[in-house]
Image (cartoon, rainbow, N blue to C red; front, side, top):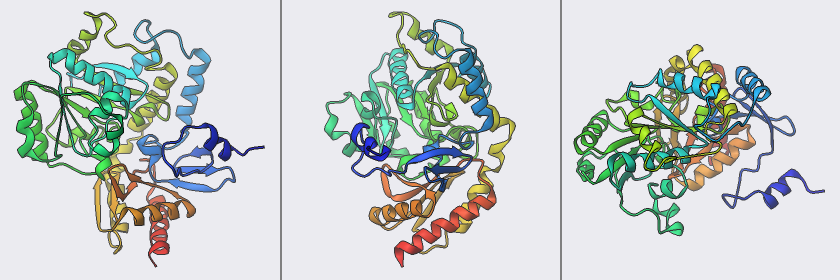
Length: 397
């Protein structure tokens, strides 16, 4: 009889030649457990998904309660479903007044696609501007605005009329023009290794979009829900978006995404043509119930208040290591830069052996990713850093 690992390799489509291949049985808090009940500290929160930890009791209960009522009733936007309505209200209550209408999707990539369609419809323009080393998804439209040719070259032709600029470079902002439908940006660029832009750049960027009539699409898939020390990453800057993208932590561990804009803009999807953007499972009621429960835990527990101090603790415990060339951080989104991608990969694998799950960044493979659940305690941070330093020493000595 074949093992689950063999079945995984035989019947699950692979994304790389060398998957991690951990066979995990459960998750609880900041920990993952394999089939032998070995515990691993999850230092990446399932890639910025499990901001309040794994299997939080209030989220589990919300999912259980909702599944007992109903799961799927109707395609999106036709009937009133309480989980969708309550979650949309909770989100917009914590956003600028112009971001008052939510379109729920199944994922962040779907949110990107919907936002790009909305921008074209609202402006009547076709050009999209994005930034080098940006990641907004891997579907056709989202791939067109990915900031690395290596990941795009095999799938061309993609969308025409797309322009790439350097992130955090104010001198290039003049390329945004009256032909630009929208510009997509991360408030902190995760996949380049937690790159933090200057306040001056973000202010100038907002001003240029306003001056040209280009819509500003802010991608908060990884930075949202407290990750950077504020509820939304854009709150660190004088740069409110016209369209906000949410994903990952929005679902509390369930698949969910959203793009949020003004009601005036969203109404353009309702006519000429009717059903301008549709989905069957977007905003699934179980996912919305899960997401709302997680959002309430985040807000009622005041988890964001301790994010910065926890980030500082990580920094103080790690920056003295001679093999860490630089340490970049915004809140609990952190990148440790090593000499090479090869060294970083060895350290990542050694961390797993030592009970610590981390990874590299898509466009910065020489940088190690640390994005733990916001619920991690100071004591757990100290343990995690000891394991990380132990792993570095075992590889470099």
